[in-house]
Length: 161
Ligand SMILES: [Zn+2]
Ligand SMILES: [Zn+2]
Ligand SMILES: [Zn+2]
Ligand SMILES: [Zn+2]
Image 1 (spheres, rainbow, N blue to C red):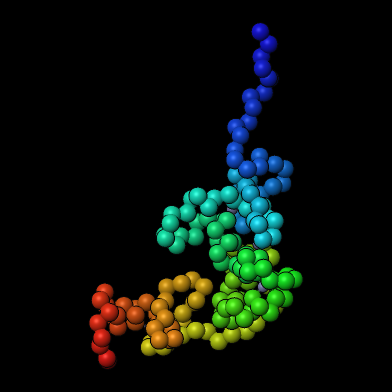
Image 2 (tube, rainbow, N blue to C red):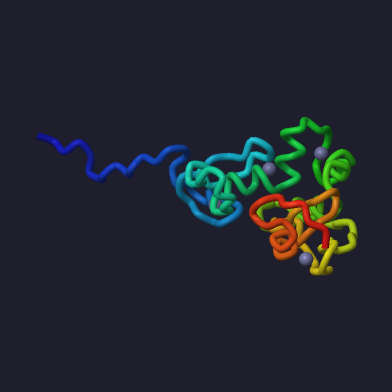
């Protein structure tokens, strides 16, 4: 009886096989890839790794989907390229716009990001990095987590300083 094949078939993985030169444009992995709907780049097909509401940033797919102008631009159906889209610029505070256009979840980064003033906690003045999260907004003002925890303990008690 002839052997079915000389070489053992490679294990089939979902999506594309580990092909020649194909790798996730963000982390470089070569297995289990898919393409981004917005820009057609190879990316890890790893959205299932994400734990709901964990806000973890361990999924390449989700990071590109949630934290880039590329994906926002695509999802909102804007015209032209995101790099020179006026609507994208309007949709976010400049700091976030720059973050979404230049962070490590981008395949292509904004070449000339606009300048912006750093965002500061309205109480203690600590610089808050909007892109990294970890802040609160109260009455239109930014608060660092330390100040927001101090002023607003577990219950929203009404308390003036
Ligand atoms: Zn990846
Ligand atoms: Zn994209
Ligand atoms: Zn846009
Ligand atoms: Zn503060």
